[in-house]
Length: 411
Image (cartoon, rainbow, N blue to C red; front, top):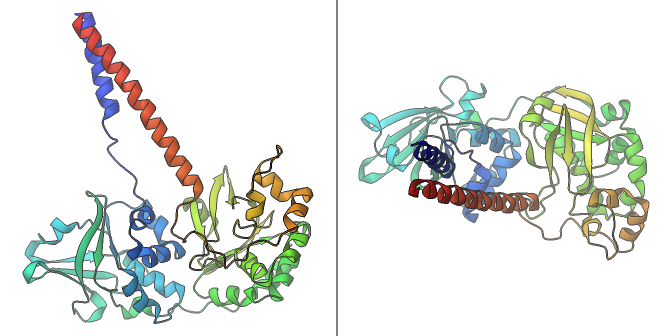
């Protein structure tokens, strides 16, 4: 009898290991990157930092549009802040898959959106009407667009029941309030601020480069700057001089992201972050990671730490970092394997010896083809392989337990 009870316990444990976990975290970037038709929409979810907000939420519906519809939106030349508001109107704070869309009670439903949740929308501007039309069609219309049907349901892209549904709609939802430019911030001289607080060399370098206008143009819609301290810039000066003109501009723009992020915001949005240098095929992204109470920036070449806050007042944040951020797009040679044993990539990037070797051939210009902004980093691929191995080993472990269980039963 005791053997039977033990066998039953073993079998129960084995079956529990085989069952999937009750909840599965979703990643909107990975869902959309499977179809290149949504690459632009996916890219701007990342650039505006909506992607991490979507990933943190449960019970939502993302109404994605294809690249052609995104081109219509971009042709309006809206500020990045306005684009974020428009796209946040496409994130419904309720779950609507294809089946539920066609079974709406009384044929119509009013859904709150992420735009409404931000507090930026006034009145009912942040709500979207969903209407089950005749002929199997479903229409979508923002509340501040006169009630006219603006887009229709096209297809379901992916769904995790009652957690996240990703659907395609035919066009962008127009909203005068979402498209309105954000109020302009008080005039602030960002280079003067940096010069005054230990980042004088970076500020002077920025002033002498076209990148300075890129920074200024993004202050209104939201800007976060990671400025290297003077000591870091002095040590990096030989490498900077070796870059092409385009490379120098890209490196400077790499130190800014086109969105305001407080320290708590950076800590909660750990992951791949696009920068001011990100443009089309030029990835120029880095990873934001927590290191205890610190925030670190990982570029695959160096890991820098935020050591000081110069200003943190929406829509602008400027943080001092202890190293110059070096993108792999400009310093790929540092990652090349050496025939002789050598330190890791980060040590190579910072040693004078490896720097001299790298300067023998000019670094690749930023225009060189690379992965698209929505591509997952190599580290993610490695992680997936590791997890796959873990799942395989776990499966073998369960198989052994099951065999033991059956052996007990035979006894």
